[in-house]
Amino acid sequence: MPSSRSRPAPSRPRRAARRRPATAAGAAAPTRSASSAAATPAELARQYQTVALVLQGGGALGAYQCGVYEALHAAGLRPDWFVGTSIGAFNAALLAGNAPERRVDRLHEFWDTICEPVGAAAAVAAGVRALLAWQPANQPLGEWANSMGALGALAFGQQGFYRLRPLSPFLLGDGGAAATSFYDTAPLKATLERLIDFDRINARADGVRLTVGAAEIETGNDHYFDSARERIGPEHLMASGALPPAFPAIEIGGRHYWDGGVVSNTPLERVWNDRPRRDSLVLQVDLWSARGALPANMIDVLERQKDIQYSSRTRLVTDHGARLQQLRLAIAQALAQLPEGALEPRLRRALEPWACTQVFNIVHLIYQAKPYEAQFKDYAFGLGTQREHWADGRADMEQTLEHPDFFVKPAPQQGVTTHDVHRIVAARRQHARAAG
Image 1 (cartoon, rainbow, N blue to C red):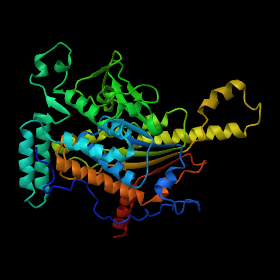
Image 2: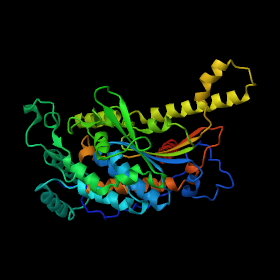
Image 3: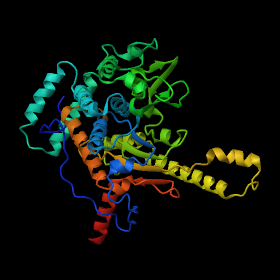
Image 4: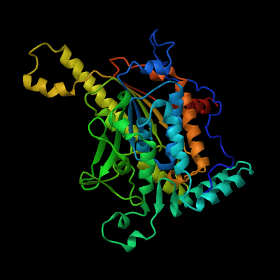
């Protein structure tokens, strides 16, 4: 169906020029060593033992993550651990399952495929896109086109992704996939097998690791499938993206799984809890913002509810993990300073597993929703919408890369640092309003 843009975007989106944001008023200037003063983000990233790209779930919004990676790739920054949930798991696997020089093209191929509706609706969408190309860009037109794209995704499905079942699940009761979901995801399996080299993932080529999150239905707990521990196949990715009641549960090893976002849509927890811990640069790319305006109508209510639910308390997870890591660092320092025999052996044995001197640097990017997007933004698939999200992700990452200080390895006594370019922009605006 029609996209949310009135003018077609180029096939390889580029960002509009942005002014580099000023440092937030009252914020301390970043400290940098002489050796890092002239280093690029890619050079600074090599100081870490692990560079993780952590991708939240969010359906059609996931194209934003592709733009983020494209900017990282252009800057020469290569993550070695891809962690994702739902659509973030698909993107993560496309990256882990292809050689670096093929990754961006594979992302484009995947998203260009799934952003076309099924069957005759594809021709209608193409016609509407051609019509919209002659119209000046404006918000009402964007709202209408976005809603039509979402309606097409609901009514027909998306190519290479899912298709509407011919029979309503309410007419069945046998517990099978057709009785417990509205859409058939068989096309997704074929798409994943075509675009992802699972042998590469499981061989841990170039030291690359893949981790995807799912929710175990019988226990209600989250579960992470990890190429460091087990063989990963298309079924693991489909389990991570099996959002009920739209998509059917996926059975793996006698257990049944739904979309990881049902329990936690922010897989940063998996990075915090990994053993053994390593000095880590973590690029966390979220698709839902926990902050937002008070709703003015029911459409706003539905959108705000979804934002809060799927942001999965991302700031809380980040802040809690940072405090916990700082506590681990304090325990390590205390154990190192205590003289031998000052602690009972039992207490020392209990504390030693909690001691940790590794450092974490969290660089956070969060998709900024448009005024014309509504509660259906996560299933408003369309080529124009996809290219718009992609361009936003690339622009935000390029803007982040303009701050090499964000990538400097924290000092051992710090333990954890966090950075977010949008916070700088928000602080600058708040300062400007206060000054005015």
